[in-house]
Every structure is written in structure tokens, then in C-alpha cells.
Image (cartoon, rainbow, N blue to C red; front, side, top):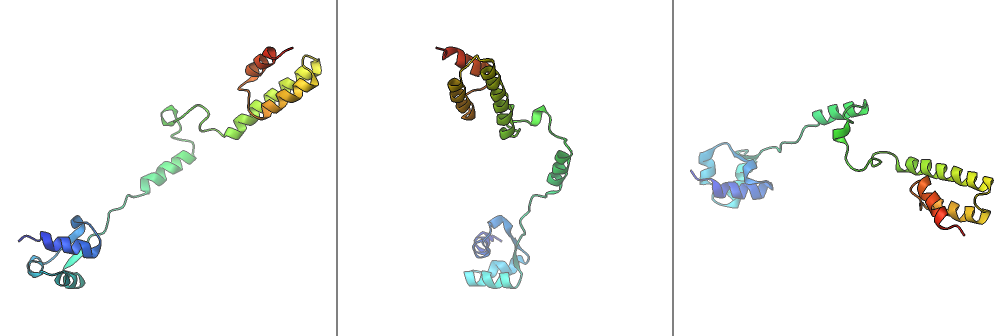
Length: 144
């Protein structure tokens, strides 16, 4: 009662793995020798292909619903740097606005010249400075 070769043939014909081939009538299948015999048994529904098992989305939907409500956002769920999950544009805007404000104050108080202001302004736009302190240290180093 060895059906290995018949199952192999059926698996190739059905385009599935051997594990997904099910045999209903063992005696009939035992007599099948050729590929054509196996094909006829498949048509007669003596040999069939088992449906693949899929992963259900029930739990995923529940989880997404919770995440929309603001749950599951604790420290243990976070990956990456501190600002990895926030909007990078907003972070950039906050920094640039703060630097530009400081630059304006320095220019208006006469601590830097207009030409220096313009050069540093463009550097700020290009993202050359990490913080106010970084920009001030740059200005201090490049004084005449």
C-alpha cells in the first residue's frame, strides 16, 4: 500500500506539494501507474488537492483598531531614534525657525554684519547646524 509515486505524480499535476494531496480510495489509486491514470483519478475526485491554510486577519484588525485609539504606543513598541516616528519636516521646521529667529536678533542688535547674516542664513537653510549652540559656536569660530 505504497502510494508515494502516485502522490508525487498527482502533486506535479495539481501543482502542489505532496503534503497537500489527499487520496479517498486507496485501492483505486494503488492500481494507477501512469500519469494519465492519475489525471483520470483527479477528474473522478478520488485524488484531490487540499486548500491552503491562510493566516486570519481578525487579530490584526483588532490590533489596528487599538492602535488608532492610541493604544500600543508605549516605550517597548518604539524602534529607532527619538525622532524616527515623528514628522521629520516638522522637526526641521522647528529647528530652522528657531535658528532664523536667533539670527535676526543677532543682526538687528548689530552683533553680526548683514553679509555674515546672509551666509549663515543660507547655511541654516541647508541644514548645516544641529542647534542654536552649534550655530553660535560656528559664528564665534568664524569671527574676524
